[in-house]
Structures are given as C-alpha cells and as structure tokens.
Amino acid sequence: MALPGAAFHQKIVWITGASSGIGEALARELARQGARLVLSARRETELQRVADLVALPKTDVLVLPLDMTDETSFSPAVDRVIARFGRVDYVFQNAGISQRSPAADTTMAVYRHLMEVDFFGVVGLTKAILPAMLKQGNGHFVVTSSVAGKIGVKQRSGYCASKHALHGFFDALRAEVSALGLRVTMVCPGYINTPLPFSALSADGQPHNQMDKQQANGMPADDCARRILRAVAGNKREFYVGGREVLAIYLARFWPARLFDLMAKRKGDGVM
Ligand code: NDP
Image 1 (cartoon, rainbow, N blue to C red):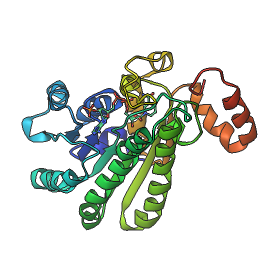
Image 2 (image 1 turned 60 degrees about the horizontal axis):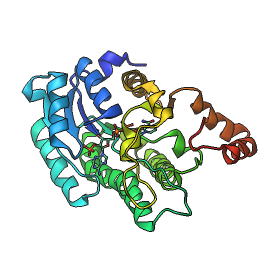
Image 3 (image 1 turned 90 degrees about the vertical axis):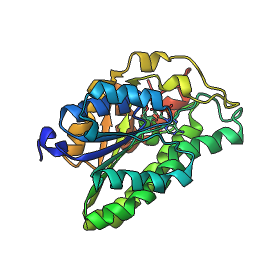
C-alpha cells in the first residue's frame, strides 16, 4: 500500500464541491500532501477563499467554477484542466445536495433536481473526463456517496435514490475500466460536521436552511478527509467513514430485515 503522503505528491487532483465541507477539507489535506489542485463548485468567491487558504503556488491551483447541472460546461472544463496541467490523476466527485422531506409531500421537480446534481451531473462530468484518463492509461475516480447510498433513510428518498444510483454506475464503470488502469473508490460518509443540511431541499424545493443535530455532532470534516485519503491511497473500492451510524451498512448486509424494522420504527429522520 502506498504511503498517503506519496500517493498524492505532485498529482493533479480535481475536487468538486471544493467550496465547503468535506471538499474544502480534502483540498487543505491534499495541498499539505503536495498535490496540485483544481477546485470546482458554483461559488467562485468561496473557491478563491479555499485557494488562498491552501496557500499553494499559483501554478499549482486552478479555481474552476462549475455547476453540476450544466452538462454543456463539462467538456470545456476538462479542456481547461488538460491545457493547464496536461493530465488529471484523481477526480473527487464530491459536490452534492441533500433532502429533508417525506416522499408523499415531495414534488417531482425536487426529485429531478436531486438526480441532476447528485447523479446526472456526476455521470456527465465522469464521461467528459474519461477519454483523457483512458488515453493516459491511469486515473482514479473518488465518489462521495453516503451511508444513505447503501440503506433507505426517512426524509431522504430522492437523496438515497441518487446515491444508490451512483453505486450502480461506478461499480459497472470499475468493471469496464480497471483492466485499463483506471480506479474507482466509492466513499460512504455517515454524519460529518458540514453545512450540508442548510442546502438540503424541502418538499417544495426550498432550502432546509438550518443545521441538524446529527451533522452538528458528526465527525469533523478534516478527520473525515484524512481518512478518505488514506483509503484512496490504499485503493479501497468502497469505504465507510463516520461514527456508529456506518454500522447500519453492515446490518443491512447481514440482517436486512432487522435494519428495515429499525428504520421504520425511528421517530425522527436519519440513521441513528
Ligand atoms: P457542503 O454543503 O459543505 O458541500 C457541498 C458542496 O457541493 C459545496 O461545495 C457546494 O458548492 C457543492 N455543490 C452543491 N450543489 C452544486 C452544484 N449544482 N454544482 C456544483 N457544486 C455544487 O456539504 P458536504 O461537504 O457535507 O457534502 C459533500 C458531499 O458529501 C456531498 O456529496 C454529500 O452528499 C456527501 N455527504 C455528506 C454527509 C454529511 O453528513 N455532511 C454525509 C454523507 C454524504 P456551491 O454551493 O459553491 O456550488
């Protein structure tokens, strides 16, 4: 297994969702480990703040604003990265939004938007990058799924669906491209202390706009980022990170009936 420090040294690492939370923490830790970074998300000022924070030489960081719902921008974005750095070694597909609404009340527009950001955007960007990686004969996709990508959670039906879908797509992609030198790591965080609940969509598409207890008490984002990087350096194909809520994945695997009962009996939303 490669040492974490060596795995990313001088590598070109593209992070989506780099303006906040786990993505920002990944950027800081990767810079510390000597990576050269491409930072993407919608808010350019926040990306610039992160770029200033990581304090890399100007030649080693590219702020590249990107909206995951704008498929037409993906190929030009890839062209910019290749023109600047000549290749891309790792892509952390980490941008995402969550949901806080029961299925009965949730509009189809909310479901479609969750799928656009959390699934189709990720697939579109992956397809735009694939030709360059296949030409290189190496490259590593790191995809931030969720514990909610492995089990069903109340008030997250669309979010769960989009994250589950990522596993189907990337497990199939891994099977197709591993013999060609490409790697895929699916990351399933439990509760991580980030502002994710603020942008989560309510039933009518309005932002939830408040912090939730589970995230507030969750694992610090820096800790999460360090663990993710260790798993990626070790080429883990699937990795779970968080507190005891990640145990739900094992319960779902080995005693699904028990997990289904527990999830149905829960009064609030969330896993634990
Ligand atoms: P944050 O809200 O802090 O980060 C989300 C990031 O996604 C932001 O940088 C945001 O940037 C970006 N983003 C959102 N919508 C878009 C869009 N349309 N186009 C481009 N970028 C977008 O939350 P986290 O750091 O927690 O979330 C990171 C990932 O981790 C997500 O995929 C989330 O589902 C996953 N996750 C988080 C957990 C947690 O408990 N925190 C648990 C399990 C999974 P901007 O607004 O500038 O576009």
